[in-house]
Image (cartoon, rainbow, N blue to C red; front, top):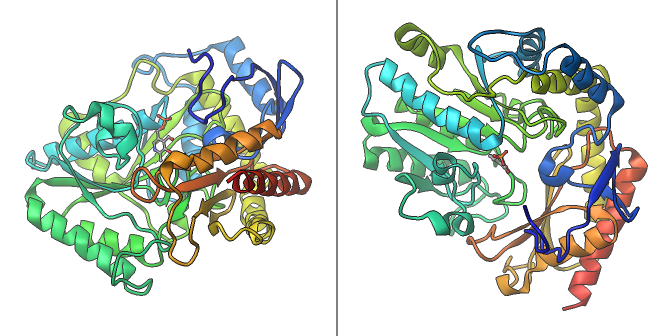
Length: 441
Ligand SMILES: Cc1ncc(COP(=O)(O)O)c(C=O)c1O
């Protein structure tokens, strides 16, 4: 339990007591507008009566039927709902309790797939710099996040890292028109250097979250990377733990690109923070050899497919569908992003405002023209996050997106049902926090 200090630079944590809609209330009665869903979790806000009622109904019936003994209506209906929302392409779902476990399952399913096909040498993973896939040892091993890896180096598995894909920060000598081809060539060379017969999967975030401050895949990137993976019989794992479940305006972020990855991880918005739930989705092509050779996926945990968690997620997803909230996220996301851009335009230090739907990143730079970041010791993003919090706005500050240490971004990820007035409040308070932090030098 944390007492006192916190990760976001807030000296003394307030005690949370209540949440209603887009607002949270602490024990002193102070109100906070949830402008980032914590880390992009609370897609329906807090205390939604229909979700709460669905959970209570499930608890009254049965909290959890253990997965090796029972299935349940909640699990089956949720599975149908997710597979439909994905727009087709997936055959199986493995449920877990966190994004890290969903990633861990994806890595293991990739390995099991090749074992089942009689290709047990395919063991190696390729991931990207400036990425975050989770805190368990496997998920941390594929994460390109220096600060979070440092204390564990030496025990992480051997993973190859290719460049981040960031249209705002192009590699030397590369234009936005040649970026996708450049990065695909790098992946191809990395696979060839390692030996295609040893490479199992490439894992990436279609829209980078905490490690980049919302970095959408550049145009043509996913298509080019998928072609390289297919050429070498390497599976593509899309980690949509943060950007998926509707956050970007489509249920899967990669629906925007028209791409179905081999394995997909979702978590945060799936049950909207009401009960922990994550899922790893698998295409029939990947699952078939596993079913034929081993019968079932050799992954999962005691609480896999927890019934009350599935009931919570089912209620969340039904409300999103019924209230057409993805249309809302898509349409309002564009105007919200425009409003943020306008409100932040007086600040030369705002280098980039980007993202899709209700998943928006703001990047701050010391020199806008040359995109030079502030010194990490300045702690600018944490300073802005703390000022916003003091002013009753929750945003998600991220540091280190440029080189692992320097770089300041803020993630804005409001609930999908946030009102226009609440979005305006986010814009005004964020501008005030940024102005205050920059003014303080
Ligand atoms: C893209 C991505 N993958 C995986 C994870 C790990 O999820 P969890 O913290 O639920 O284990 C996160 C968490 O922030 C994430 O953003």
